[in-house]
Image (tube, rainbow, N blue to C red; front, side, top):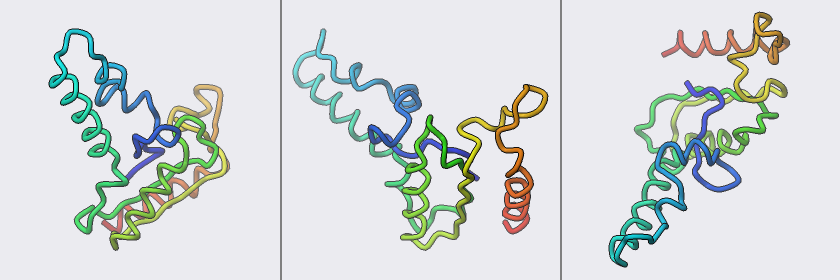
Length: 139
């Protein structure tokens, strides 16, 4: 079950901050200070391998488990293309999946409720919860 997930490491598609936290910054890997050429060059190659490995849309196979994806089309933190790419890869590999894109809510609507003074998914909440509950029952 993926809720507004970060999927791709591709610039402009993925969430750069998330990938920097996961594998380090490109600047850090490409910095040559204090490194001989071989160490520096190997570091660059390792960085590219890690970016590819953790771009989940490129790792889907027929062994990928049944997947439920939900997000908001107005998520400006993690572009919706992340989820769409992953969904397309799941379909291409014959993995049972479903995807729900709500027109509102942005990113992080799990923290939006009346207690905190906002409810970004109020009008979608029933559909959101019902679709998640049905998916879990069918596992």
